[in-house]
Length: 266
Length: 270
Image: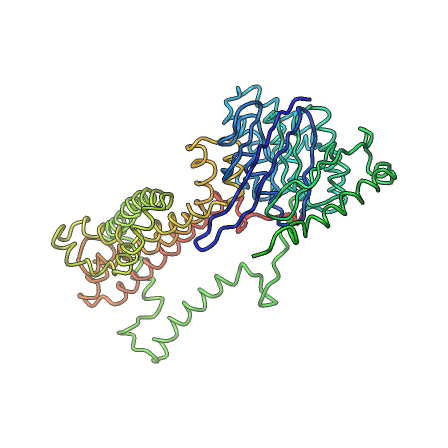
């Protein structure tokens, strides 16, 4: 599998007036074409920083992100992001349809094709009838479905998801996880899914990258050797699932104190 | 996707429906105006009974001078507000979106803004005499500030997530302005317009009153000078009614344009 997305020696330090914060120290990994990789780490592990660098929304302090052979210096055209804060990411002054269509207009997709893409995307997230509604008329889970539809309609080769289900209830979350797997399998895009939820990472991913606490490095790149067909009850009660979860869990516990002892704390 | 019906508003008074409270208040006020002079508590020379004011108003409405004056006042108000809107909007959007300009102009704006428009009366008279121009100058000066400041704040209020969303989908500069910055600033702007519209009316009438430019203000001064007390009150009531009208108009505009905004929409709890 050739790497579609390459992150090489990525480093990010934030410069404040009186101090420097090293958020990401050294990250190197590759994501293959059509892969679904999850990134987990303790809170404050620089997950969002990493994702923003990959998305071209934040300039790294060192290293580089390469997508399909081209270094990322700004938001790439074949990438879409689903943010955690769906309520703020969707524009309340536009209907669901308009929200999904606007990025397509920016991409200069012809009007006819736009209509098709919007309808297909809404259909694929189970909201075929909601096009005329405003996002704030929908429940939280439905709003995040709209955000996913917007990203899917954009036809990206890479979909970045930044803790997308952290703000919805458990039931909705399970549905959205299955939706993500289904769309990924059907559309064949590459998905990079950031979460703090270990179970979610194991359930969704083919691979789980475990990040240390800041300054961030990769602690482990774990392969999730569960069957491709996943189902909330069966998969989660699979003994292998429990093993993987326990393994990742202990890694994340270690991650919190990863830098202690390894170097004197200043 | 269900839109819940607005919960029926319970009357605060308990026995009268809420929507009647406003008219009842007005009626009570009118009654007070009628009773005070008639009972002798206030001299009818200083405050004629409400019925006399209404009669004077009817007389005024029968003559052409009144309508001419009303039109003049509305013209001074409308033109002034339009100029203030254009200037405040243009400058505000520009200053708000360029941090350098914001820093550079902040203290100047804070210095200029509190200068009462009325303090410019001598200058206005010097420049325009008693023509419409002098009223316009006062109105524009007073009404530009609220719009300008609201525009400056509105432009800066863009949600970081919305901004990143626009960036990640590679919105053009124009698209960001049109689809993200403008809708974000709009609620601020409309508040600015509402404030400016009231201020503009105040300044239009004040300008006419002090300078003598044609309009309701100068008619009030004329009525006072010729001891037509009831007419004077009648004209004052008209300016008050204008103010109410202006406010209703801008409120209606807000409800129409900002149907999506949290202050107006009826939301389904998630």
